[in-house]
Image 1 (cartoon, rainbow over the protein chains, first blue to last red):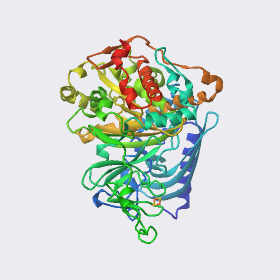
Image 2 (image 1 turned 90 degrees about the vertical axis):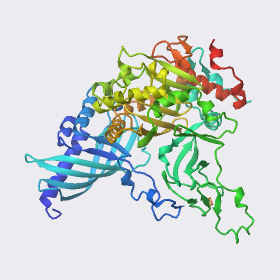
Image 3 (image 1 turned 45 degrees about the vertical axis):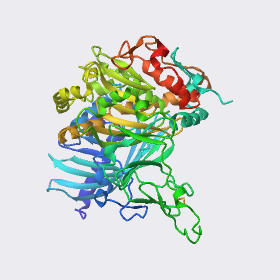
Image 4 (image 1 turned 180 degrees about the horizontal axis):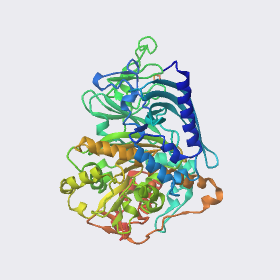
Length: 182
Length: 432
Ligand code: FES
Ligand SMILES: [Fe+2]
């Protein structure tokens, strides 16, 4: 897999095209890239002492949370199905989705792509990082930065996203909202 | 003599000066006269269940460490090292027997005692009295049904008196079933707005829902109970600036998820028995405990603190909560409803930010700032309702709660202290 440059190139092109659909606000086409059983999910990060920290002496080791991703469901910012993604897209079409009116101008930068074998021969596990710049109204600016773990599945000869798990590398989100997609 | 900022609110005429949303001197005075005086929400008991558990938060701009000591007693301290003032605990939560300052290494036990000072013998010549330099506790700490509150003012009335009749209304959020509630999700983010805009919105703005949030209703994220003409209810103000948006007992504000609606129907007799006859008249959906703690149980289940961060900035710490006794699939459904409805990405909540941001930022203009804001809707159409133990508006959409919220704001900004506030006549008499 790591040694299959054609496959890696294909995956990269798929992800870049997906990013372009988002930046061009072609959300209906974008949502069509997901399988019906997708879980589309993003969580923020907690802010915890590592176990070896000398800042505290732990009283109850059973209460110690080793890894902040253990709290991922608790910190989820997005936890969507295909259906709720479609509802979010439909909401944008109502003319009353005020967070996107005027619309965000986004630029999705996708990098650090790694392709690994998936659960079966039809699937791939794909890692990538993103920097998403948002400019809105006159001078509003936000950066959303994080990592993605995707499951790509070949359906009728085309790649579809069958799972997307994202980590947004902030504890207190600096943006006023998350009204865009990643 | 300092300006009396209380005069910037005219609750009789339903007018409020825009200066209170933007001017740094007023913000500073608010920190002293509101945030350092009132009971402020810290955290829910389920967030520190076991000995040693701690939770870092803020009271106004003061960092506060809430900790359950090794014996199980809950304390709240300024999260500030007594030596050079470094912030002591830098984690959101965790479990600790003791905390050591990252600067020079002073160590405090989880009950606040200063237990360790590096070079105590050599550099302090054993002359530092460690008993004098423990962590500084809040003036008063108490909980109501698992909701922990504290105040920096020793003169403040006890929590139960401060809440007054609001206590029953809190029951309708957190004491519907045996065991109360627990927190299942946390969201923290920055809003570029004055803290009072979200506080007044959650406390009394049923008016914006049919317009600001219609898109979330038409695309299935919310039942949109307050967008329906047949919905009954009232703005309710139980006093002391606490305010709630209520609908009628049979108006359903739950998220439009079949299993959640079925769950609520199934527990209704139990809830009704716990809450008593008043719940057969009124169903509180959203509210604000003065000044900056809000709760909501329509579309999602959330309570949150609007932490002030300067006149034009608010840091919101929001939690999704659910009855502890609910089955796991209901807890999960409510967690998801929270993420999808009331969170930074929430189909409801994301549309609020621009409005509060622009309402705040237009206050920067000299000419704009001269125009008072209008909170006249339903003026003179509210009355004290003894059965509700509160002032209630004639129609369910009204700005009577805005007037009550800002009236309380003005009283606090004008008063020299709690003694003066206590001397003011009871609300019923003021209006009679
Ligand atoms: S500031 Fe904390 S030890 Fe010096
Ligand atoms: Fe709203």
